[in-house]
Image (cartoon, rainbow, N blue to C red):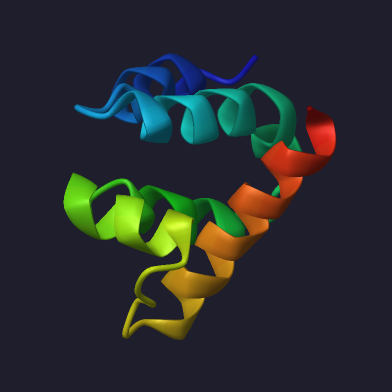
Length: 83
């Protein structure tokens, strides 16, 4: 386990259960398989506000940043498949 995983787990604890359910399994199951650029994008995603993240995850809105939107789509699809 990398030293950054505990930090990421903490950052994935959000104010909304719906986001916790997306981000926590993603860090546990997919983080180690991401390349450096994808990891950086995920970390940038975690800096976004919860209402924006929720809207992106639910498909109500899209991020203006294509990389963030692609990462959110990847997370949602990966979590759907693993369930």
